[in-house]
Image 1 (cartoon, rainbow, N blue to C red):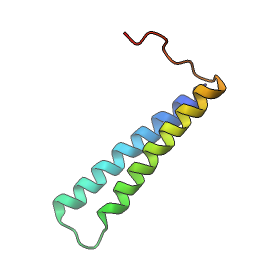
Image 2: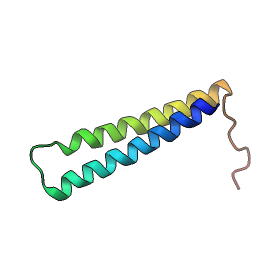
Image 3: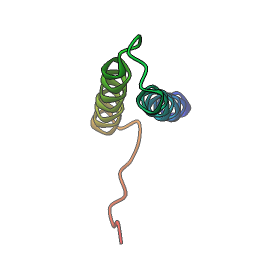
Image 4: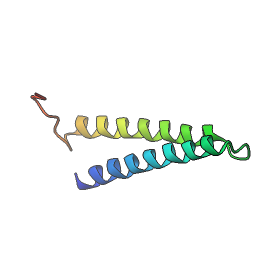
Length: 69
């Protein structure tokens, strides 16, 4: 269970890093680097996070909150 939480946390940090890296390229108007590469990595990290959560819930590694209110 600790590995799942660390993996999700690491992917979230990587997702935020990719978002800010793309923002810096956009603000500098740098034509040498491709901003879509970092945005694509962010989307891939989001998909991995969702997939990891779904697999962890399906296998019973993590328990969803039965009453979210």
